[in-house]
Image (cartoon, rainbow, N blue to C red; front, side):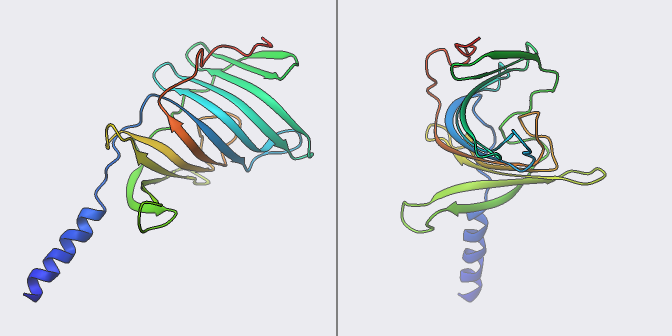
Length: 204
């Protein structure tokens, strides 16, 4: 009887740590909170933004509210078109700058080299108040090192299809080409994008 209970205990524990997340949807939109630990001077240390994301077309559009190191606040529009090699940036009511984009597209998805680290609840562990997420991690094997952590939550329609909830990059290239030390939190994620989700800013 004791052996049976022990086997059931191990079976239950093993079942609780099975990896659910396999892929990330290619199209989604969300509210994004970003902390940029590389920010200096006029760069944004923190931003709260609307992100439209297209992994297949390699497009990211940001409508962001920035808090700068100098204390100045502004609203900025950014559009990354990786396949076309173009980057748009405009302030609301201001001028638009269009620059060449030469960095490769890096998705906000489960990266191939990341290892599944188990599951944890964000928030309460009991009842229906917490969100059970799959954790992934990898360490960069190069001089100076680096690491990545990502937490993903399954979609309702397909449990193996998971959206990013938390992502952290430490001395590692992330989806945005301007910094390598950053943390992202995603809120209100949905696959229903707004109209013209990747159109250039009106200022352009």
